[in-house]
Length: 111
Ligand SMILES: [Zn+2]
Image (cartoon, rainbow, N blue to C red; front, side, top):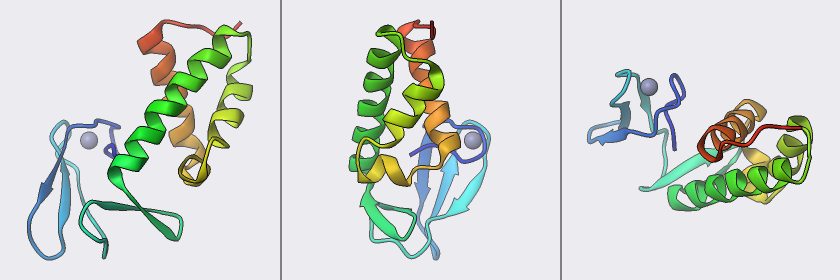
C-alpha cells in the first residue's frame, strides 16, 4: 500500500473509528473504509495488503524484464497491468508509477 497523495510507502495505521491510515512522509490521512483488518479495497473486491504488495513487487520485476527485452513503456504497462486479478484492479496511474519506480530502482530505460 502507498499514500494516494505522495506515493510514499511509509504508512501507519491509526486506531479509532473509522480506522485511518496516515502517511509519515506528507501527513495525508485517509479512512480505511469498512475493511476487514489487513485488507485493502480494489474495485469491489478486498485483498489482503500482503497480496497487493507481493503483486506490486512481481509487477516491477516483470516490467524490468520486459523493458530489458526491448518493450516500450506502454507495452510494459499494459502487460504488467494484466498480470493477475490484483494487478487488473489497480488504477492505470498506479501501474505507470510502479513501472517508473522499477525503471529507477533497476536503472533500465525503454529502448
Ligand atoms: Zn503521503
